[in-house]
Image: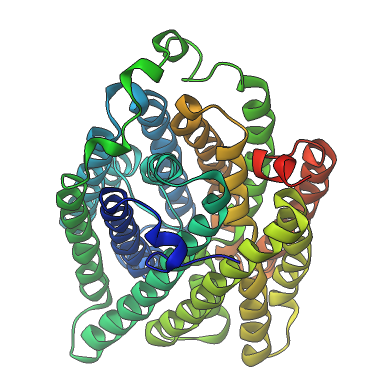
Length: 424
């Protein structure tokens, strides 16, 4: 049974550690609110300022690709140069990207800002934050509590993304109703995204040194040429390839594209789109809590695979539904089970590597996911912009994700984390 921060199980954690856990949860909540806030309007904003479908796809692809490159360096060096320093640097990149997107519509400038800054077109995590926060949380709690804590961490993020999507859609719709041009209305939302980066940077400065890896435990030689890894390089490499495939598949149906598809197919306005995505993220959050309980009973790998498979079928069914209510129902049903693999996947990665490899392992696998998802918008953007092909990305995404699930089960079903080996 998982426990929320603040319950009896959580109270066994020292007060100083509980304070750091609370701060890391707060930054997660604010950041994911910002990501959801932005995702509803980002593609609408880019098209409103005159970018074509191909240019939008290129921009989103470079956003994710640049994020992967910057985050790879930051996360693989975080345990040596300081986790808190890297988190503050990531917040500064988030602020900078938001400012650039609100102050210019020039494609070359946007491309530079997208490549070097931190922008989330998907409503999901980007930047170095997730890897370093999870490495820090894993250091603050025992193994048996790790998956449960990650489930609550995922729930908090999902609810925050939902609130952000609902708020972003409502703000944009209200601005348009008040007479603002669509581009100006969407720009107000992006200003809010930049402010989130400023606030979380301040919160990261309050986190204590207890989240840092002790200097004696850091193997400096592993940073040079090995991406911060030593004994786990082979396992992390295999996981990274699989996670890249899953992310590439997911990149065909990121939330910004889903919002755009519903807007073009059914004429859904931003306020309703925000409500739909909010509901989807709330359901995704509850599924994370269920994942913690299922993992304790059936194991992390089994939970990852056998909850993910049916969600992929539901994703492929969304564009095949004949009416808007049925399409929304299929999407919501998909989100209700689609995120059970997230806390289990993250916990599994932390469990099978050494403590001084955790930031690097989470970073490398996270970067692999960023690289995978970065390639997809280059293909999906033109498809969504072509009426006859607009449904294809959903089908491609669902099919590739099924392949990922089967390969993951085949490769890792026998490699068990310490808490499962200890339980027999």
